[in-house]
Length: 390
Image (cartoon, rainbow, N blue to C red; front, side, top):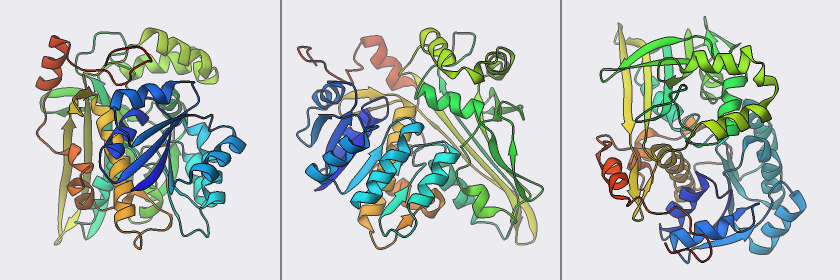
């Protein structure tokens, strides 16, 4: 049994702790700054392998004291991106493996510097995008003799959009604002460049449904650095329903809320609901030469909500938690293979998809199960407050 400290009992941390705690191989120390939050999640799971703690991880002294007392072998940050540097620094000081979900480019670069010279694994960007999409794209890239273009597209969308943004808050509001507001990495004409967020708008069609896609920050991970000089074009765009980009441009650029992100966060969280009935669309397209011929290969998948531990979890919870848990599992199952700063493209797609956690990415799901459970009121509770019945 390996002891893992999971920081953050929010939308994703709740399932990370459940997957690891239910595996039989991990004991989870689940910590959150809000008093009682971790205990609510632990009660919801009902597993003796998940122990809750009230801990403000932004307090480096308190975090280090917890690590020295409870001695986890790794720390998993499910915190907002701006909290991760302090966590990474404590991980380095205390000799822990480090994993996070950040989409922030500057944070990732800082984690790389913190990891210099260590034999422990420091693996940021372990979620969906960045994360799994880089692993899928890298597999396609390996099939080509010479590259021309690499396109990565990912979207977490409500199955039944009915507001002006055609969107639901399926994960971190801070994270989504960060993606929409920061410069985006890309390769243009063979060189790594920055491009503007909410630009590069395009229309795409998948399985007969029309979507739009546009530049957002962070989703490319380290792929551009890995393949600079080897490919003419490489970019990442977020998939949304048509019209979403126009509305976000109005909010962030027209009303200047990119410069007042606290106000934008309050607006979004007060106006845009959460949902368990979502769908995650994963699309990677690679064009290049195979055997002297110009060809294209695609990885396309739709992941729907799934039942885990008798409760319904949204598609974005499933894909993000499964992504980071599979990476953690691969690292611990082959400790000689990974050390120092680890890029997502260092993990094999085949290894991820055959991993017990990565199997949640399997093709062939549908919206039927979530629709039936919602209609019957049988989705279950992801957290249980003191005195409540599960």
